[in-house]
Length: 208
Image (cartoon, rainbow, N blue to C red; front, side, top):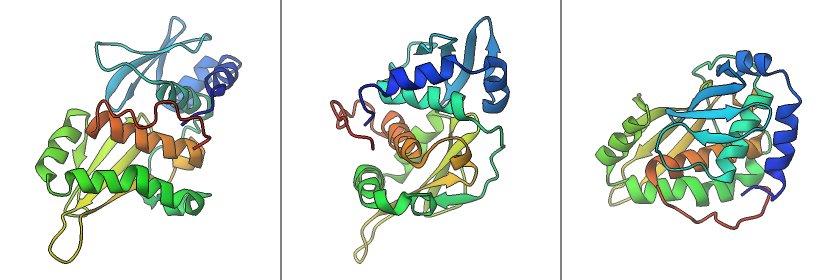
């Protein structure tokens, strides 16, 4: 989903910034030239200034989209706390332009695979720090990044209407990441938690 040079570009930006300020604004810990933070509630380390991003323990390795996302988060964090006020992708700047692919790549697969497996949806979400909240037939808030949670909601289908889903962004999200990066964040969190091993984006080279 990222351009081939996206990682080198964001690494250059990251290495030029003050690490202590990045830590303060992002909610990451920083010591001995290394950031420590949690991504989907999993421990991640980021070396400074090299920008090497890796899982701390033996979890599934990060892909390039996730590495870019984590460096963008550290580099652009505003420091604002989550407000618990939620926006749909349509509400984001430029969101309507990418609404159809967002439905195709995120909302439709989630509804199709888990609309009749609500208990499994909740079980998998809880493995990644998800907290059950009110919304839809079931809903979870996942701490994808320290100050950037996502809310995932499902409605079970019936004889008249198919299952559907929604992914909501905290109202501070755009002060941390661009709409394009939030698009990537939602899809990569979805894949890591509910579609492990999904390779549908391997080899993609668009700006998504």
